[in-house]
Length: 301
Image (tube, rainbow, N blue to C red):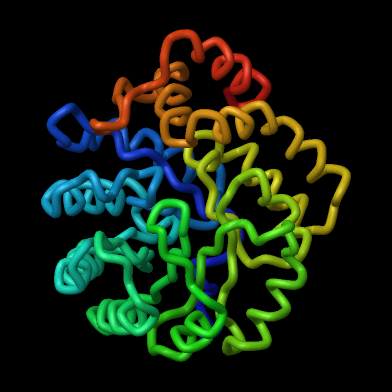
């Protein structure tokens, strides 16, 4: 039998997890967002990522979200589930919950209150990776977790069974080619290296990154999928044209935070009526016309 394709390639679209003020997930609204991603033929769904506000949800609500996603997607796309938690045992339990519910892969960030040492991070990831048989992606997100994976640590973790990929932040000076070359020299063949930071996605894919872990893909999967196709096919002109359509939205991300902007955009599109979990506040009404203009530039809006 041919080897199954890694879930950590191409467009991984990260939707919101709409919930009410008490943190109860609106499974109908979530399934509506997921249906758009499936129809757009993204390569995977990144459920309960940072855009999916995983750290603001209880274990029970995370389980409800995963169950709703598995029901909706019905095997048509791989579902990568975020399982980050403060404690290693809690993250392991969340990993087992996701596996039991039918997830295809896991995403783990080093969430911590006390700053972690590299050895603590190594032990945390190794333990959670051993909790299930699912492939796990390292979530290197220093702007949120305040922990940065060194290339030495990534090299060590890449040899751990079940750890199969890394989701990287944008590199310094946007040197994707240099970083990809160094990491691929120090990780096993088949270890997938992808990037978040939407405004760097085009350059990352043109440089040969395996995946784009995309915030905008959660709401605008058709346009995001078209950008991925153009970039992976080496069509620089088409990739640049599509990238330019997203620039107003990404400028809002930089100015106000992608989470707040995505909630506003989802509501403007009538896809949900949720607001960010407190203490995060929704965008002020004075910003909404700019969000409306930015999403109007996208063909599926």
